[in-house]
Length: 211
Image (tube, rainbow, N blue to C red; front, side):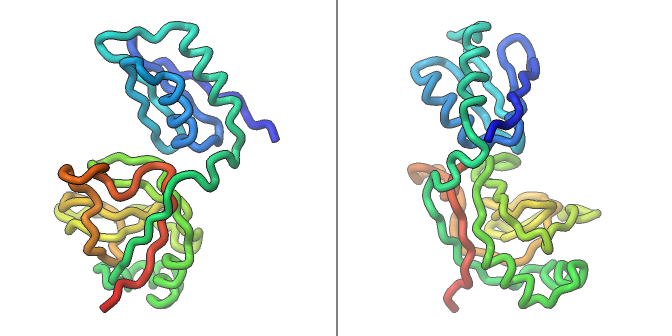
């Protein structure tokens, strides 16, 4: 089925961004990286857009833009549904906000945990901090806006939800998401190759941690 044409948005003299019009941004970004292999270009996916920025030794031509938009248009809405690895993350569900999430969602804490574990998440894009992957696939029953008052410190390994996303905080940082659990996994380590456990395109499943 055809979907809308990606929309090009100017982004300064050396970059451009497109609204992918419903296509998976991680798939578009992967296709573009292949097309630009060997070029001094940076390709950055976000929630609904992909940014391409040229480096010091390269220039984005009108032909480049036409080629990249054409590649994006060829991608179907369901392409990449089974791309990437499957990453399983063990969680202890004892987060500080678990009871409040249950209350606000009209569920028991056990039902919140069951809904989170039953979901199959996909890493749509990374941002906020190195290794912080925005995971789509959160059941609609658990959709809540971010906290009214963000915390000044969220412990590393905190498993959280906000809006339509779930995530794991890779390091201690401020944060406004609802904390429902924690994992001992080091989500980001510069000494590891690759440093991030989860990258865009990966499937993520949460399970109860062994006690």
